[in-house]
Each structure stands twice: as C-alpha cells, then as structure tokens.
Amino acid sequence: MQDRNFDDLADKFSQNIYGTRKGQVRQAILWDELDALLPTLPDGPLAVLDAGGGVGQISSGLAARGHQVLLCDLSAEMLKLAEAHAHTEGVSHNMQFKQISAQQVGEHLDKPVDLVLFHAVLEWVAEPEAVLRALWQTLKPGGVLSLMFYNAHSLTFRTLQLGNFGYLRANMTKRKKRTLSPDFPRDPEDVNRWLVESGFEIEQRAGIRVFCDYMKPPPPGVVKSIEDIIEMERRYCRQEPFLSLGRYIHVTARKPR
Figure 1 (cartoon, rainbow, N blue to C red):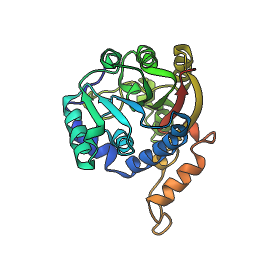
Figure 2: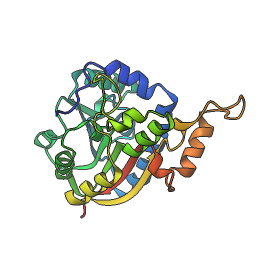
Figure 3: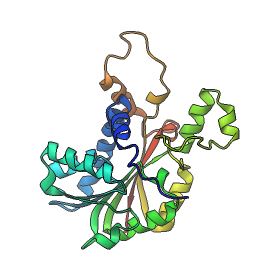
Figure 4: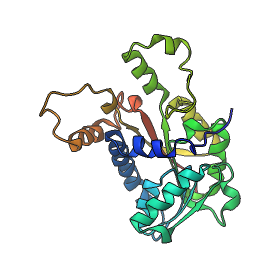
C-alpha cells in the first residue's frame, strides 16, 4: 500500500470538491471549527502547516488573516493549483509551497508550528498512525491539530441506503483506483485512539455534511438556498447521532503544554 498522489486527478478534485454544494457546506463548517480554536492560540501571526493541503482554500484564508502558512503536498499538480489560488487571492506573500509528504515535513521546518491543518488526507495514507505521530512532532506545546477525515460509518450508511449489499459484502473494496472515493475510510473510534496514543488531547468534534449528502431532491421552494442547508448543518453537526453520520468528521486535538 502507498499514499495517494493526485497528479492525475488534480483538476477533477478541484472541480468536484470545491465547486459544489457539498464543498460549500464543508468550507462553512470547517471555518466554524477554526474560528472556535484560533482564539485559544497565541496572539499575532501564527505559524501554520497545511499538510496535504491540496488547492489550499482554507490555508489561503488563514494567510489572508496575516498568518504564515507552509502548504505541502505530494502532488506537483495540486501545488500548482494552490499557488495559483494564493496568487488570485493576493496572499502569496504569506505562503510557502513544498512538494513533500506529511511524514517528511518535520525535516523542512525551522521550528515547530502553532497549527496543523490535516484535512481529507488521513483516508488516503497507508500508515495513518505514523502520520499522526509525525504531525505531533511538528507542533509546539499547546499547538492544535485540525483534523478532518472521511468517515467509514457514513460510507456504510449511504451504501445501505442504495442497497449496494454486494459492495458491503466485499468490505467496500474499491474496484477503480482513479476515483475520488477514498482508499481508506476511517472508523472514528480508531482515529480517536490513534490521536490519544500519539499524545494528543481531543477537545472538540463535529460532523461535516451530517445530512445533506443523504437528502432527496426537495419539492420546489422548500429549500430556498444553500444557506438553509448550512443553517441546519450547523444546528446538528455537533449533536449525536447526527455527528457520527457526517461524511467527514472534524476533530480539534491539542498537544499538551
């Protein structure tokens, strides 16, 4: 097994993930989570690592607030998109870009960082525990890991809804490799255990897209806008059982002081 490199799917990834309703919901809830954790970190510009940062929409938003961001990714094509996005947003002066893996990034840091973003990457790496330990090493004491991962329970539930029992009997093994369906959907209990074993303290959890991926097309006029969906996602994303049905789960995890 090896970690996924998105050179062959960079444009498709950008269009399908960010240019859609589900991308808007994902961004909204992620920013809610970041806005809650940022005040717990030191004042002034933060040192931020975006590990496996892809197009860098979140990290460019942090750079726009004056924070200093290092975005790394295995994919040269994704880095090109990230640099172009940063240039368009006018934040290139607060960002650096390196083609390295999350496991290697500690070797390229001059000093530990305040915040690590690790969004939608854990489900693509072959050795998740090793990656989390490596990211723990990059953080200052008191620093925070913003972790978002693809939830295996959500995939199971959606597959049951579709009646695709053969896929479940095959343990949801992918037939095609060149798809945006993650290689390694993660069980939240496993992720929580790996974080604690790595030394993190889990502070907050939220589901991302806890219902909108399961919605049937509503009658005309019932859902007026994307804002209606985001409002309901915000209402239920931190409540069980909805949290555990999120297509993704976000975890705020801190390195003890």
